[in-house]
Image 1 (tube, protein in one colour):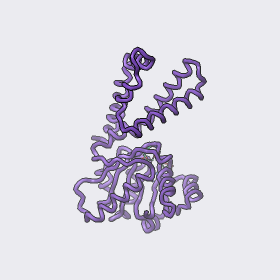
Image 2: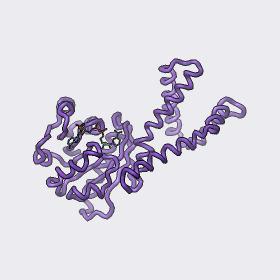
Image 3: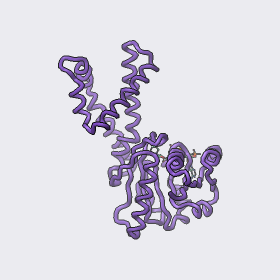
Image 4: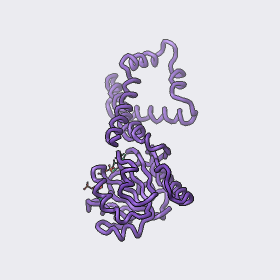
Length: 271
Ligand SMILES: NC(=O)c1ccc[n+]([C@@H]2O[C@H](COP(=O)([O-])OP(=O)(O)OC[C@H]3O[C@@H](n4cnc5c(N)ncnc54)[C@H](OP(=O)(O)O)[C@@H]3O)[C@@H](O)[C@H]2O)c1
């Protein structure tokens, strides 16, 4: 793996650095970070080279740059780095910033867009990965860039290559979706409290249920509805609960949440 540059060493920036360091111990990092306390973390924890304020040094050291500042800081940053961007390789994880927007400033064919989620912190993210269509770059160099991008995404989770038009859907399902899963876990735990468990025990039990459910689906490769029907015995306990879920439109509510988050992500992309 190559020398990686990170611009914006916040939560996500650090997640990528931590994941890459675990997977490729020999990797080196250069960072540019406005907050000196965060730059110090990059230096102390990951022996990163702090290039804040020195773009020439930064771009001379790095092979691939990860853009990890907040979307509202994107445009001023892109203007600043535009003069150094000729032929360089970039990955943007900035939500709502389309490749065509990045292309206005970055003078290169090597741009990839990632949509990770919070679980990148523990190498368990889902990462939507997109590339520009119809690039004029030599195909072998483009292929090696794409391979490197997928390796970088794998360091923080599971990459899913998607056309860029599906990025807002990935945002709804994954970046926002993790909050919906937290909400479900909270709700299950409250159900446990209602029936007599303490909240911490109820959360712990729910986490085990969720982990168990994921394991069953992964190990068997079967779809959720197959297991729901198997768990649900005639006139048993599960069907009682499922009826309440459907009376309160649980499935429609979750579908609506994913759709609403995706719609908002699309609005933020300005399309
Ligand atoms: N967190 C998620 O779950 C998630 C999911 C998907 C995508 N993303 C994307 O990931 C990106 C980073 O998110 P985050 O949660 O890691 O944000 P964050 O914690 O705020 O990190 C961004 C860091 O970049 C610094 N910064 C801003 N402008 C800079 C510049 N021009 N040069 C150098 N450093 C600069 C910020 O400093 P200041 O605070 O001083 O401005 C901050 O320390 C965002 O674009 C977000 O859309 C995040």
